Length: 230
Image (cartoon, rainbow, N blue to C red):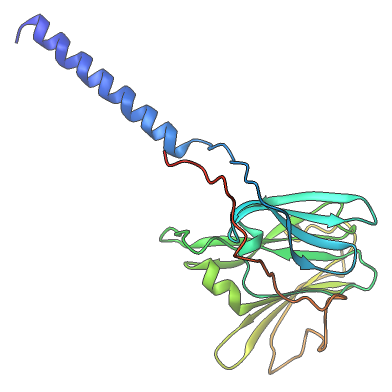
């Protein structure tokens, strides 16, 4: 093989590698978040001044979520394409307003690996000024499976309830000021677990002040400026 031909082959190979890297970067790198011309929607309300809003969305499953407290001037971005996809029941019933819990899920088209997806909730013990996270579900189909869950917060605890075929499995976590549920607890605090038929860990009749128990979204509202296909 002469030198000129070898140089041509090497240059083509190098060029191909460059194109492949560029394509990989295009699809795997951080993508800019589009800005949609849609009004904010309140998808869950705790009471007359505390609520979760969905903003800058392409549809009810893909947007930015915010926690809002108009009385305390709190506005926290919670994430994108996650919170709004929770399909279960959510009850924020702390009469003091300190403890708040907000679960997430994934959009219906999102695929999980062969190990499944770890899905988180966030909780606050200071009225929504700061939030911490913990995994509440592992699933191969988070959007569908989140419908089996009830998540609730009261003045001293967080409950994660998973419906089974004939029963429900309840996990109770302590909620006190500044607790991190992923770290060792202060002395005297512990988790509790039980089947609902055997031990009623979660009080009956819990409800948010507003009565809301599920996220709701008006699917008819869509942007007039969707992004152009790549």
